[in-house]
Length: 372
Image (tube, rainbow, N blue to C red; front, side, top):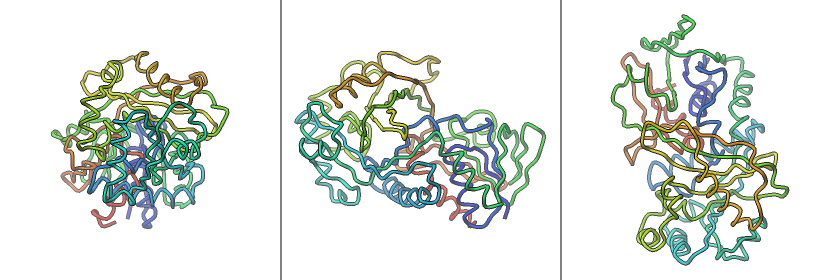
């Protein structure tokens, strides 16, 4: 079978991976020379702990298994089963963590409630004031910037993979894709993983999609100068991830509102150390379009101050700042929008902030559904 994959972000790359793994030939098209969207602008987190019950959690757990296998075969993706610590600094935050640790599925998620001493033992870089942390053993870390190219190199080694960068898909007829060079790529199957690109050809093929675009801001520091053994979150992440919903979170929202700058930018602190020792820190969430074209300094200042408070030391200097946009399903129980188009091609979009976490399992499900 010959499979045409459009889009070389992590979702498209994982669909190419599944096709090659199943013995098929792949032609992989990317509108840029290399992917430049959310797949290279994220934390590189495989974030299991905060997922919603049901399909989202099951997808994340399966994806973690697949990432572990891929990481063993392609070390350059930077797979590290580091776990995460969500740091607790108030009694209201601690109550949310206690409720999470008491969930019936806490063991599957890898939850453990740690006191202050156990938190610092797990991550000695956390020297700020804290009551403890919610540890999630199942969370893990990848290196998002080099991952896609490393995976492409591994796919090329199969002899059944061709990557064509700088090729924008202009028309889809059945399972054939014409690019903006005028070349038509004919396949037995075609998958479109177009990321946050929802206009143009995508709108022509699927005018009504239950998907919205979300904009975020992030930054990266110079090397920290010491090891940050786990991913780190602040308790504002409880407000963002669905696993923590319940009376304790309602009480937190009512009794401990976010500072105005955090509420305005819908921030949560996530902090991950890169392979070179630098820190990726974020993020914000903007839902109302049209998005601004600039980045906003007060959001960065808030995130930097929060990170420094948790570390109990000044942050290294910031070397990079960026914004990104991803596509997110608006139907709460759906992990991804997977739509079969007229003629047999499939559009896969809208994983939202779950793309890096869930892409391998989403692609596996597509391959199973299409009977590759």
